[in-house]
Image 1: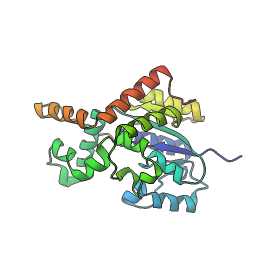
Image 2: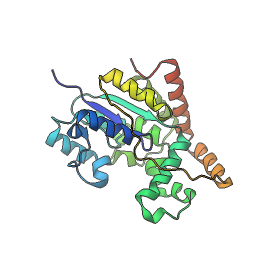
Image 3: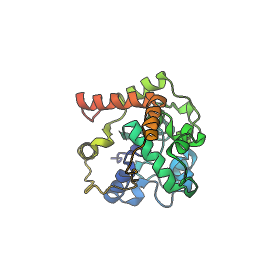
Image 4: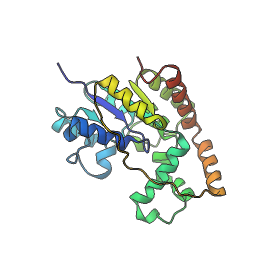
Length: 245
């Protein structure tokens, strides 16, 4: 019998790195893409060509694909995949993303949150309605770095993302209820992921200002599709639970 293959739609700053490390601990490092041998830098986590080349080289030992690949990427690969994802409240997700940029790039240490948020590359590629984008893009809308695809999200994309959460994502969770999400994965896939050791976290600044309130309001307005998708996911979990069928 062929072993199941899994595709984790890892949305930025939703505790996905914590889950990635738990899966590596349970399944073994080679079983979870990307491993240390699977390319460098952006190619390793975003590059569709790199992913395909890695699967051609060692696809027999890879059980779970992570990275930051839109759900539609799975349609470009051979075989079928069991899918799962975790969402996060959009303002909190965006704020965490902003803080993390200072860790990744020392040149941003002295930039304000607003300056990082409005950086065109970051905003268009990994901030603006990021969760809808990762779930709603179609294969023909992807380029080699699908998460960075320059596609403006519309209400049609939002409706597609809702449909995919409902029908195509086998296990759904939200970061704010991370433990129940982990337990749902274990129950559904027969895994034992063990203790939850939070990874890749960034600390919020202790004091809020009026500028923080203004930026939060702007994030809600400019990422209204993500806000609606998140609310939909919370309601779906409340009425149906984490499993698609």
